[in-house]
Amino acid sequence: MELQKIVIQVNDLVRSVGSYILAQREVISGKDIETKSLNSFVSYVDREAENKLVAGLQEILPEAGFITEEETIKTERKEYNWIVDPLDGTTNYLHGIPVFAISVALVSEEEELVGVVHELGNDELFHAFKDGGAFCNGSPIQVSGHTELKDALMATGFPYYDFTRMDEYLALLRHFFRSTRGVRRLGSAATDLAYVASGRFDGFFEYGLNAWDVAAGALLVKEAGGEVTDFSYGTDYIFGKEILAYSPGLSVELHQAIETYLNGK
Figure (cartoon, rainbow, N blue to C red):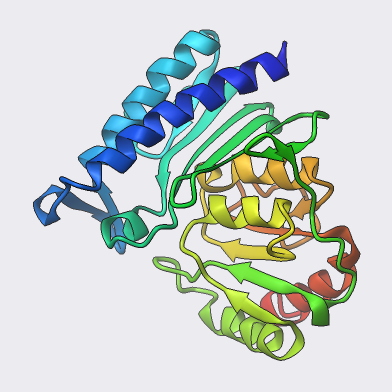
């Protein structure tokens, strides 16, 4: 499989779909917004963007299955699968906050092969393919290289539907408030991971996420020299609904904090 050729084709596709999403900002209104579940919104823009992505990806790799947020195509796990979020940060998009992204990954048996995140607010296209490095608008990127938590700028996402670990999560936040340069919450996990890959953030943690939120960004981080795990140092970060991504020098301090405050060990 020619991964470099595939990623170039995906880049072209997401740029085209991104132009559609940006154009619709001028015409979308409150009547176009639906509530899928608690604090989870969707509009015709999400669905049409996903339709466009699915159609284009089918042409690039016809034999692949799909796992998509809006379920515009039947989820069907095959040897190769596209994992697609047509608009990560829908709430930001609907409120005029310029942090939202398209996220597309190609995986094989839960191994990431291709990852593309098009952050539309800043017109930044991040891409990576297995063993090929990570890039932003064509220039190589790498994680920060910081080795002490006191020098780290962290990112996270706030729980919006699963509040079962809220007390532990707030305890972890308090720890990071005191021991890091700060914690940011942008509202797009795909963007957060792209920013870890490019060294803007030193680490990112969140629970309650889905595969389409993290699959592409996780590959970006790994190909940029970073590490990605679940909260138990394991590898179930795509489908396990929890993720920790970081510059390798922070591994011990970050996992100690997760174990102490979030996992209660």
